[in-house]
Image (cartoon, rainbow, N blue to C red; front, top):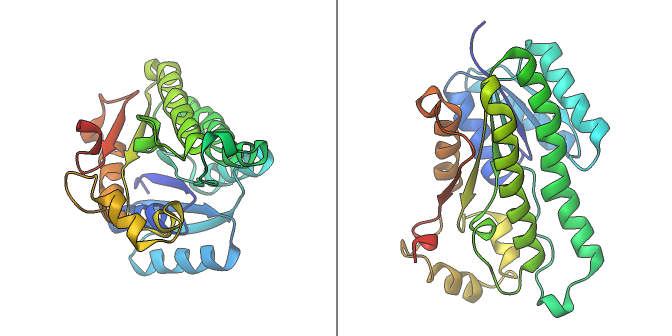
Length: 249
């Protein structure tokens, strides 16, 4: 068996789910992770109908023992990890900075920053041992610009960008690439929550996008698949904005 082994955290909805399906359709062996057992097993079964070997491993990325276990079980099952997509994330609570709470900071950073750090830590250990690998972190345009009313989320995604660059420098000479994908608005439940469930708010946000629409999860997934491939084998330490022109303004 020489099909690449792909591990995806936060794989049960939105971009993570679309990414799992995209890799499965290309014949990869796919390990999906998330916190909901029933949904995870259902998605793994769906991936198998596409002809892929697929496994679900339950994990909460806030806890190192669970992250380590997922990586170790993946290596034990398939012998290696060729691609890791660190997608688990939360939008946290939107509020003006003068109204932000330490609880929201702790909750948001536990998933978006600590979860990515722990994932990179254990994925990179496995990849360094095998002498190759590609890690792709999910950032956001909020990791490249400021967004009024979302300071904690913005700060967490800026941290993901920093982790990506630093990890890329540590892995480059050993053949391990680390990049980030930074989506603009994507047609997911997270976008609905981010704008407070308001169709007016969503329309107003999308109106700021030069492309005048949100991305589909599948469009983000295809960028991730490209970054993971040998077609991008000299690309590391970068954050690719997939944002309909938002950060070009």
